[in-house]
Amino acid sequence: MKKFLAVAATAALTAFASPALAQDKTEVTISQAFQSLLYLPLYVAMDKGMFEAEGLTVIKESAGSGPTALNSVISGSADFSLHGPEWTAIAFEKGAPVKTIANVVNGAAVWILADEDFDYKGPESFADQTVVAGMMPTTSTSLFLKMLGENDVSKDSVTLTQVQIGAEPAPFIGGQAPLAVMYEPGVDQAVAEGKKVIVSFPKEYGPYAFSTIMTRTDIDAAKAQSFVNGLEKALAMIQASPEDAVAVARKEFPNLDAKVVEAAVKRMITDGVYAPSVDITDEAMTTSLGVQIALGNLDSQPDYANFIDRQFIDKAIVD
Image 1 (tube, rainbow, N blue to C red):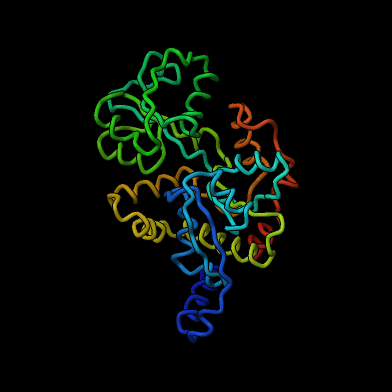
Image 2 (image 1 turned 90 degrees about the horizontal axis):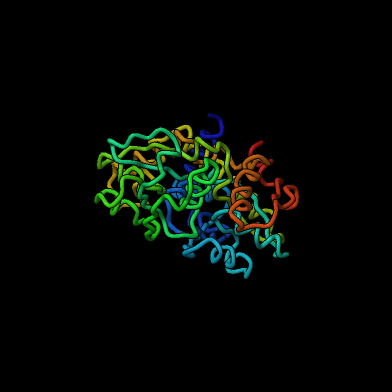
């Protein structure tokens, strides 16, 4: 509560500051993989003035993919990037001067849905079924295939109807398959049409570093600390005030049905998708990158102490 009061007081002072003082901010750029409800903590921090309270003006750019966003950081055109940590781990493994400095999404944000009358008894129920899924490579389809393998369900027994990521709801709702694997907001778009969630990967996996903040090893420490501090405040607010988080999400995604946005945000809060803080535990990162190793996308686990720079995390949590 003290943290929220401090943020509110700072925001109030900023609102009445002189134009000269209001403009006295350090500009930083973050390259996100794409505009996504998953990245709501970033949008909350921007919308609620949490970065401004830390002395930053944050410019947000959408790269179109994780590797492209990370390359913006490596090239120096962006200060930070937001995407899956596997791309940073791959670059780190090859000697790129990159590191991970904060958590944003701490759950495997993928769900399996079914027709209302589908009798789901476990992964064996997927055998001899048609499933709508995102086009590979993508984490949603990868996790589904990994689940099949771990439960001795032959991949050949499942017919995958692969579509562009984000396009899964249409064929699923349209009756082309009784099952679908997808991200939000597609999940709650389907639920609104009478479909049901039968598997929540966030609940299956627990802590899972799904999307994190990356930067260069030579990042200015003051910039990085201010950025992580702002994110920490946003993550705390999402947990304490879901309705405020929903309001920001509606502003960021005005073309989505407002009820779907609300349901999606609240599902991700309930299922532990949004990180409770900027902290990245060894367990969460090991689980996340372990999936990538199992899929053949990464050779080995990076050294936690070198891959994750905890100095900004620890200070943000204490403050």
